[in-house]
Length: 72
Image 1 (spheres, rainbow, N blue to C red):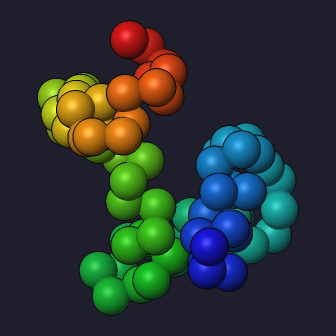
Image 2 (cartoon, rainbow, N blue to C red; image 1 turned 60 degrees about the horizontal axis):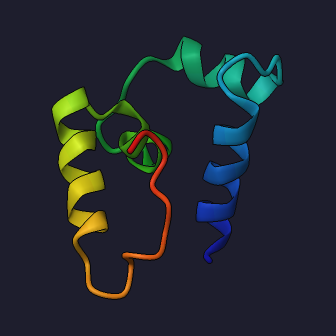
């Protein structure tokens, strides 16, 4: 796992309710398309159909049939 992936995973665990100064700065800045922070959190902004498609593609991957997918 890369460092950015670990950071993104920790942020996902903490949720958006964290009152850290970094998250406040990020919100006040507004969305920039070239901002790597927005790219990193893109996966959390999927619509229901997109996430369902992703879950289905993961579920039908050979070798992943023993994994329990949340919400199945």
